[in-house]
Amino acid sequence: MNISFDKQIGSLEREILLKSVEIHDSGDDFQFELNKFFSQEEIIAIAPRCIRCNMCVDQCPVDAIEPANIFKIAKITQNCVKCEICVQTCPVSAIKLIDNKVSYNYDDGDEA
Image (tube, rainbow, N blue to C red):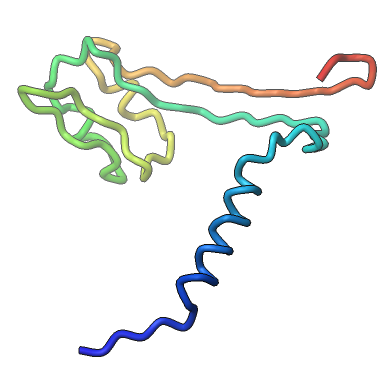
């Protein structure tokens, strides 16, 4: 088996040295601009008090809940469409809809 490299070892060593200098740059001159920002997302979460009955799994219309077993509680997956059927189905109210909001509004007079 023949292996050939396009670059010589000396050339690679120089590139590594140059790139390591860039890595150690302090970044003091780094500037960015972040304008007004707002994000709102609903999250459905299952609390540890889940009794592992899997009623939520049976009622989920899009199969977005991994079933619970003796070792772990049920888990909401990325397929969730936030229909809230599982929230209404849970007999111990262990599933909650959390309204998550994040906003950023920078004014020139504020410290960054």
